[in-house]
Length: 211
Figure 1: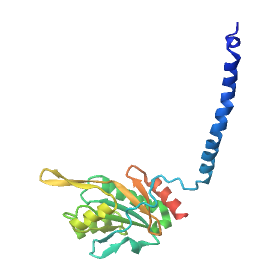
Figure 2 (figure 1 turned 30 degrees about the vertical axis):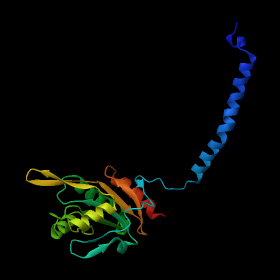
Figure 3 (figure 1 turned 120 degrees about the vertical axis):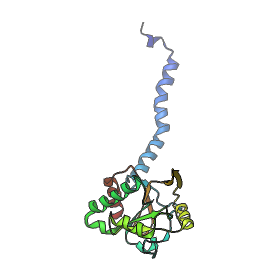
Figure 4 (figure 1 turned 180 degrees about the vertical axis):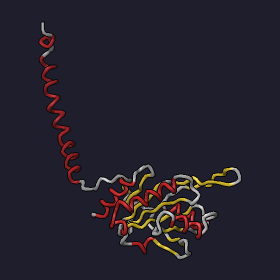
């Protein structure tokens, strides 16, 4: 005997009705999901979209020549901002080399990008040392350096962590290896991970430039 024929009719009816019932209940959820996906026109950034973040809204520090600089003066340009120190063994030179590559890949649009490097080691990063260090990568890169308290406040304003770590007779500094990208209106838009490539940074910049 076919086992299915031995099942009670009532059980068969409940099973056959449950499928369309479940579909009827799920359909509004599926339609809502599809419609919200269609209406979401946000660009697919490679970095972390932090548009509207309640931090990183201002920065004012002296540059390597002693001139007080502010993010507001760069409106009209896209800003790539990074915190680091000149004696950093790998992360900082990698980030600055990548910034150099980004400018090159942007071609003429590279003139619209301003790279800003904020020192978290004012004790050793003298204005002259900081200026020479950045010029070795690109003369258009700007280095900012405050005193210990100004540095603390600037890092806190961008939620950047840094700490001095003793290494025998000297020290190194552990710090957040994240770059921040501002749009031409001076708004903080993206947090770019250190593991991302120059090509991925350029892709995000071009999306912002098309807005």
